Image (cartoon, rainbow, N blue to C red; front, side, top):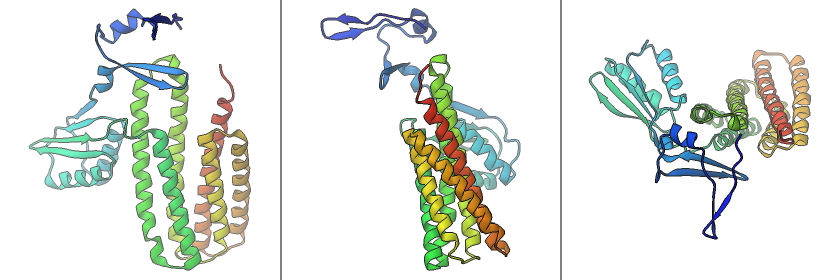
Length: 318
C-alpha cells in the first residue's frame, strides 16, 4: 500500500500523482484518458483503452454437435463473458439452425455472420447495460410472479393459468446465465488485493444467482404437481414461502442482520411444517408438490444464511 499526498493546483483543483510503475505496466503516456469510477469514499481508476478492449474467443472445432452437448457448450462460452465468439468449423445447416435457437435464449447474443466454415456470434450488450445486483433483482421478480401464478391457480382452479410457468422458468434461466456472464467479466478485472472485498461480494452473488435458479426450478415442479393435486391446504404454505422469500431477499440487499435471522428462523419453521404435512398425506402428486415446495424452502433458507454472513461482514472493517 502506498500513501500519497493530495495537492491543490490553481486554487480550485486537486491532484494526486500516479505510480510510475502502474503507468508503464498499462502502457500509458501523457494525454491518455483514464476512467474514474466513484463509489462512496472509494475512487477507482481504469485506463480507458483497457476498458475498450474487445474480448474475443475463437473455436477451431466443436467437439460434438449432439443437441444437449451443443447447448451446454455454447452456454459455457457465453458465461465466460466474450464480446465475440468465432467458430471456424464445417457445420451442417441443421446445426446452424440449432445454434440459432440456442443463441436466442442468451440475453444480448446474436449470430451476425454465417459463411463457409465460419460462424460469428456477437454480444450486443455492454457491461454498463446490466449489473449483477440488478439481474438478481429481476430473477427475484420472476420468482415472485411464479408464486403469484400458482396461488391464483390454487384459489380459482383454472388450469390454463399455469401455462405461463414454463416461460417464467425459462426467463429465470436466461437471467441466471446473464448473471454468470457478468460475474466472469468482473472477475477478469479483479486482480489486486485492494479489490478482494469485491471478489467476496461477487462470489456471494454467484451463489445467490444459483440458488434463485434452483428456487425457480422447484416452483416449476410445484406447478406441475399442483395441477394434479387440487388441495387448498397447500396455499398457506405457498404464501408463507413467498413471505420468507421476500424477507430474506430484502435483508440480503439491505444488509439487515436481524431480518436475516428472522428469515432463517421462519424458513426453518416452514420446513418443519411442510415435513409434517407431507407425512400425513397420501398420493404421489400431493407428496411431490410438497417435496418441491420443501426444496424451494431449503434454497430460500440458504439464501438467508448467505445474507446473514454478508450482513455480519458489513458490520466491521479491517
